[in-house]
Image (tube, rainbow, N blue to C red):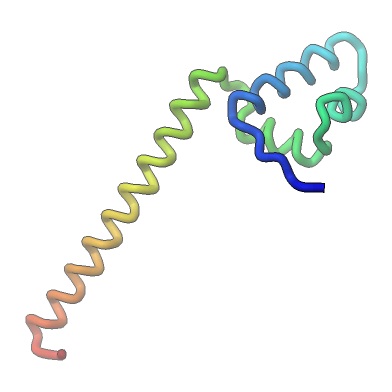
Length: 92
């Protein structure tokens, strides 16, 4: 069975659905089975997206992507700087 990649908005909606089902008296295990994921996945999602709303999730993902881009830029610049220092010393 192929894995389904859930979008962050879907994850938040499913977490809210589990909260509603649990407040209606269902156990967490039954509520998680109802949304079609494993308990491990549910707890991992809850740890990552716990109290977020869907618009906050979009902002979080955008910030993570920007952070990754900036980290790559800094590492590239650091590598260039190290190469130039080596060349300036004459160890090429």
